[in-house]
Length: 345
Ligand code: ADP
Ligand code: TRP
Image (cartoon, rainbow, N blue to C red):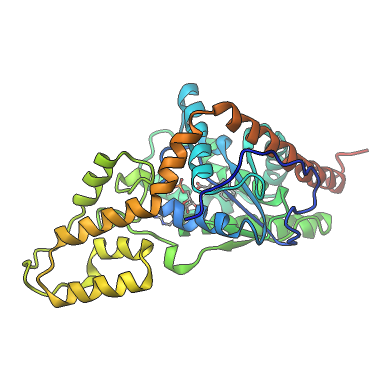
């Protein structure tokens, strides 16, 4: 996994993509707890892998995190943590524009304008909102209800083409596209229409309970930066069936095999499949292999993160500089929008 980048600063400050690509890829990783391999494979990795090919924007949606985080210190720590995570995983601020949402008031301003043309029923039909209600969320707020509008503002403000997200966020990108179509129809061509980027093989990464999607809220995650003891506990605790050690095992119904498949090479996976089918190979052995694979895969990033955490001033500089770059596009789009709706004289 590529993790190297230097501490030199980018000097580019225009709306022109630094790598010459005319396609913009855009995603956000909410500062609401340690990232897990579900977040990594569906949202973080695609952006990092494509940062040299596409004009890439990655941001930290801290305004979105306000729907759940109610403590200033926790919010500040979460933002620093997610920034360190992304940089350690290989986000290169020289190549991608990396910034924090709350540094740009343009997100909130566009969100209000879009909320005035978004039908109430569309918000009511959003899966994430319906799930929150179905799960008897104690304190459903207006912010949570209109969350998809703010997300649409994030995406449309940067005239994004592709938005890497997991399956649970796919509908929100569709909503952003619908809002863009409606706005363009009412006020003239203003926004590019974004498309979600959700490769089926990583759309829903299974959790360590082997049943639900991996999620912080289900407490079934493999956290990328957990300490070794926690990681070991998480992997050794994955439930398996009661097939005896000597008998053949079905790799296709086993969560350990599934989780290994996300990180292994095709040859390593074929090898593990053969061992399952041959018998005489226990689930404990498979878990040890998964643990070793995880440490091999994320080891360099885990070390890099420790190094980066020693210089938080550098981190703040990167985010401020990223905000400066993002602002150029954000202000340009917002000016066009305000003119289109008649808020500029
Ligand atoms: P969580 O459900 O753990 O709170 P987030 O809501 O912070 O995760 O999601 C951040 C990104 O990771 C989103 O694009 C989301 O779709 C993606 N994601 C979250 N969980 C999974 C999963 N189990 N499989 C694939 N993608 C996921
Ligand atoms: N809603 C996303 C999540 O919960 C985070 C997010 C906010 C986002 N704005 C975005 C993702 C824009 C992609 C594009 O994970």
